[in-house]
Length: 69
Image 1 (cartoon, rainbow, N blue to C red):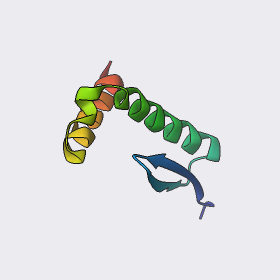
Image 2 (cartoon, rainbow, N blue to C red):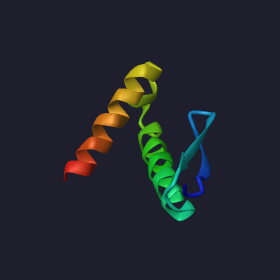
Image 3 (spheres, rainbow, N blue to C red):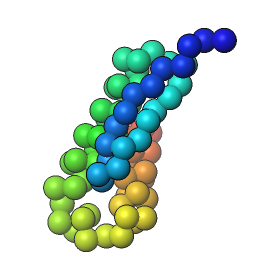
């Protein structure tokens, strides 16, 4: 069994831990991508006016769009 790695990220003032068998660098890269995407959207007043559920949906759709492009 491989060693589990973990990395902490903070989104909307809440701390989350990413865990997995991937390298610590990979987890940091994923965490940084999510943090940056959230920071980018949070600059938009219309985004901040949405409920937290809607903010999550909008972020998920944008990340999926990035993936498919």
